Length: 635
Image 1 (cartoon, one colour):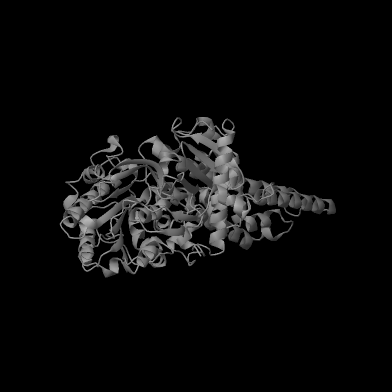
Image 2: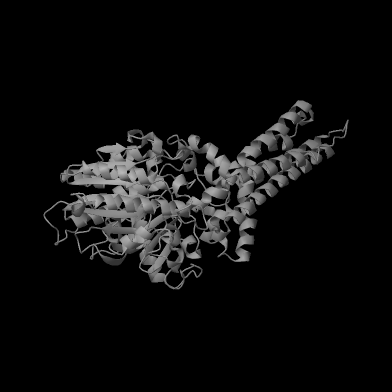
């Protein structure tokens, strides 16, 4: 019996070592992303570490279940040297690999503001950029690899400090076997509780929100847990919060776009420019504390219709296109483009404009197939896709993602010169993506900022200046409306841009040199999924479509923005932001008065909470049910 107890002690020691390793990972995650969590109280940080043990234990037991069984099941196998050698190798190798996602998120979190989920695996397998850029990642994040190796070495060295000490010829009585079986059953029950949880629903990433505020949820979780618990989340769930007719009172995805009265008879060309990682914070027009990097955009935006309260629907490039081109925001763990629903019939903005005689195209200087841009552009109705393969000069390759923005935007302008009008075209920049390189000739000329991205922001701004300088001399220019936005935000300087509002704040502006209506500031909330109906209304076409947004020019509709992150939906409407976990509302903030979202007023403004909850439930219900049933086209 003493041998058995000794086995249990050794097991508990080694599990404790893993718990310490996971807490070290959590501490590193906090330190490297401190600007996100510095608005949290010290007590909240401590609570996050304490509750994090619950999720760490889940992962440890999940991946070490076989290892644990060898120790707790009454048997003599563990005496054998071969078995002990196997368990030693198993423990070191498996646990060294399992913690790797934690180290990936130390830096990747800066891009997404959430723990990575199973979509990371799909993203890696989409296109060949990840393999091409792997050497660059090793070069840029070498220190992460060093820390990981140090922890692996720590696990290896500590493993043998507490060894199984055996008493030879120990007499095993019947009652000892019974005691061992009782301990085995007890430990088995404990493991079941850890893995399953005690609630009606198994423990998942949303469970973390029970213990902390939404800001600390990524700190409580660990990345292996987030990935494993979302592996089967490609399937959306049918929701029936309301009967369909009642749901439509609060939000209807069938949107009849109002027709503008002041539309010219000429069908205007439409060009959408999507800028990689251009947070609103980086643009001097919006943020005087960050001026000097975008002199051209600052001057251009002064001549545009600027949507002051403008938001992306997602945090990754792959989430932006469905929202911008088809009014489909990202409201699940798996981006729409990577989900099994990606082949659903949709009626994107290009499809609609083709019915009105437009030729449609999409340009991106990256590798063909990157993030499914090519396939989705075709699904949305683009006639042509032009990627790196179609670009004529391989000398302009940046060595990482694709073609430098300056020559590519020049090429794009030349392509537009040859388009038959009216045309619709999208161009997606890429130079302001990691590793944030700029051509050698600009390294000493362009300004640098606190983060590496700023010089590449300045480079893309220069490329845009040259594009517009060339384009303004072409015949099509005066009959063209430009919409400029960013795919998502990136690392923030100011605390505001780290909160649940600021992390989605991207520019959205419309520019038409010959149209005085496209000037000034519009204070309606505008999101990416509002872009398609806004352009359709501006062009004056009669159209009904399935859309999870509204035209920002529609004066008869209320405006909102919706997002999904870390298991929570959020709805921004008027001055309020509501957080909803799929079952109930968990927080309500007045972001005009409380810009850091510290004062949860959900119990003070019950009527506002009820009204916003009805809207968000109706959006979720129609979104899930229509996507599941492939009903994204008006019949």
